[in-house]
Amino acid sequence: GVCISAGCWSVCRLRGLRDSTLERVTQTVRGPTVLVRNNTMPAMTTSRPTSAMIKLAADALQSLNPRLLPLPPPSMEQSGGRDVCFVNPTLLCKDLPDEIGMRGVISSWYISPERHVVEMVVVGFISVIALSMIVPRLSRYPTDCANQPDANSLRPPLLLRLLIGICFTLQIVYKLAGYPGKLYMMLMPCNVIWCLHFAHAFVPMSPNARHVLVQLCITYVGLPVVAIATPDLSDLTLPFEIEYFFLNHALLLVFPMYWICSAKVSMLPLAKRGESVLGNFVKWYSMACAIFALFYFVFVTPVAVYSGLNLNYMLSPPPNPGNVISGESFRLMSIGCCGALFFIMRFGALVGESLATAVLLKVRVSAGKGKKM
Image 1 (cartoon, rainbow, N blue to C red):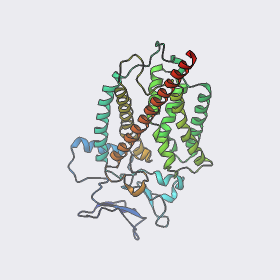
Image 2 (image 1 turned 135 degrees about the vertical axis):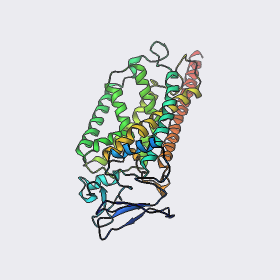
Image 3 (image 1 turned 90 degrees about the horizontal axis):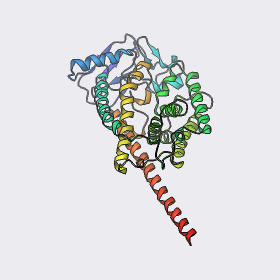
C-alpha cells in the first residue's frame, strides 16, 4: 500500500497488507485527509519487475502531471474541508475553482503508470495492426453506380447542418464557461461524436470520407444511449446544463436514424462489390473498435494525465452498480463493454434495415401484382 502525508508530502509503502479494500484515514497531526492504498493496486511505484524501457516511459507519463494522487478524492467532502485533490503544491478540494463540478472528474494513479504504459503499447499495437489490415479492404463509396445515391447526397441537408452547428456551438460555450480546463471534456465519447458530425457537416471532404464518418457514428450510437440511461451529471453546474445534456445526447440518436431511414447509407454491403453481409459487418465493426481503443488508450490517456481530468474514465473507473468495473483491469473491462455495445447497436441496425428492406420489397411486389390485375 501507499500513503501520502499531506503535511510533508512523503510517500511510504506499506508491505504485507492482504486486505483488498481501500481505506480512508485522517492525519490528525500533520495534515489533511489522505488515501491509503494496499499493495494489490500499485500507485506511484511498483514492486513488480519491469523493463527499463517501460520504467522510462512510465516516468515520462508521470512527469506530465506530478500533482496526481494515488487515488481519486471522494465525490463528497468527508473530513471537514481537509480532503486533498492535488499535491505539489497542496490543493484542498474545497479550494478548487469549481469544487462541485471538479471533484468527480479529478485524475489519479488508480492504476500505476507502468500499467498504463503496458496497456497503451499492447492496445495501440493491436489497434494499428487491425486498422492496417481493414482500411485497405474497405469498399469505397460509389459515385458512378446507378443504384446508389450521388456523392453530394451524403452531405447533411441544410436543416441538419443548422442543428449540428447550433448544438456544437452550445457545447463549446458550456465548456468554455465552466471550470478551468473543462474544454478537455470535448474528448469524452459523445462530444467526439459531435465533433465527427460537425466535421461531416462543414468540413470539405470526399464522399468516401463522409461515408466512413457516418458508418462510425452509427456504430457508436450506443454511447449516447448509455449516457442517457446512466448519466454522470457531477460536473454539470451551469444553468440548464443538465437539460442540455439530455437534449444533445438525444439528438445524437436522430442523425444515424436519418441516414439509415433515408437509405443514403446502408449497413448492407455496397452494390456490385461482391462482399458478404458478414464480411462487411466484421470490417466496419472491427474498424470502429480499433479506432476507439487507439484514440482513448494511446492519445486521450496522456491528455487526461496532463489535464488532471479523468477523461472518459481512463484513469479511474466510472460510477457503476456494485463497482463491478474496478481494479487494475477496469480499463480492459470498459473496452470490452464498449465492444459489446458497438456490436449490439450495429447488429441491431443491420437487422432493422434488413427487415425494413424485406417489408418494402414485399409491399412493392404486392402493389405490382395489384396493378397487373
